[in-house]
Length: 388
Ligand code: NIG
Ligand code: FE
Image 1 (cartoon, helix red, strand yellow):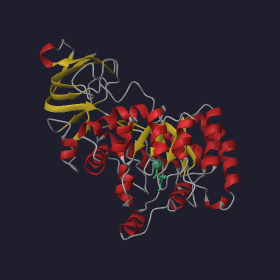
Image 2 (cartoon, rainbow, N blue to C red):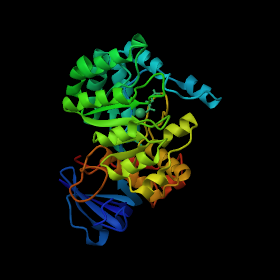
Image 3 (cartoon, helix red, strand yellow):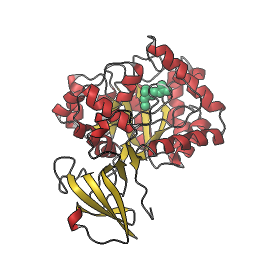
Image 4 (cartoon, rainbow, N blue to C red):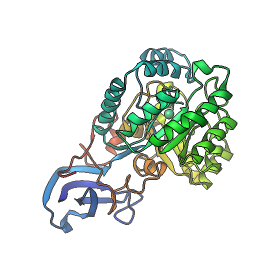
């Protein structure tokens, strides 16, 4: 069955061959969707016939958001930690242990219900592709079950056994890395596409450069692709390791040296910025303009998690990127869609060129600029099309 979507005041395709600029904008546009994919894009006056017609009434349509970094499998609540932070306590990753304790205690059904509610929350706000990490289990069985649950809702699952050293391994990080690269990886690899490490040598909780290299190398040998939590709290070795090892993405990129920026600009690794984290930890924002000027590919993601940033709203992250990191509205929208797709190496999402997955998000607004112009207003939702 084919569906003709009309009444699109502004269509963002992210396909420069389909329309104007990097966003490939078509005014007064129409889209034909067939078999779950985009079959035709162009001005409404030239639209072909289709089986069904959907009129969006003069709204903007954009590619569904690609949120390439979340931690949605967890139990518990850290509102008190957030409250203390707003009164001056610094974020150092130490609170992760409390989520680990709550997650280990929770039943599969409780974790699944929370996860599904959060995924529904993202979708209701225009996110159509979501990556989900483990990292709050940190035993062989708990990491494997968190990934099994994540795999029920997305193919973009990431094994983050190397999130922090759990309390029972305190002072024995080397032994814990042995567990992560051995039995835990073996149990988790069947449920994961990606492997990730929280690389932060200065932190009492996370992993140094050698440990990060060991985990990523083992993950790759087990058939997983790489991504890294890099340079969040300090300018450590994470970004350069990510580029050297061919990771798809280095995430956070808050503290970068010139060598880090050069590496990101010259390599095949996307710089994923997570400005919700700087908002919620009251920290300086990453220098997006420096990365863009150097020629790096920049993505935006939420990092939705109970500790450092508990928002599921990509639109909020776009507004932060524009207001706080001086990205243009067009750069920010591209980063939240095509950028996220690049960070997940997914050529089928993040754009609305012919052949792309039919992930359309409709805005209660005439242009994409409203995403940043009207912060906090629920303008976006994924468009449910007949037969999809
Ligand atoms: O991406 N930096 C490490 N991990 C998460 C935070 C997790 C948490 O605080 O629970 C992050 O910010
Ligand atoms: Fe994260």
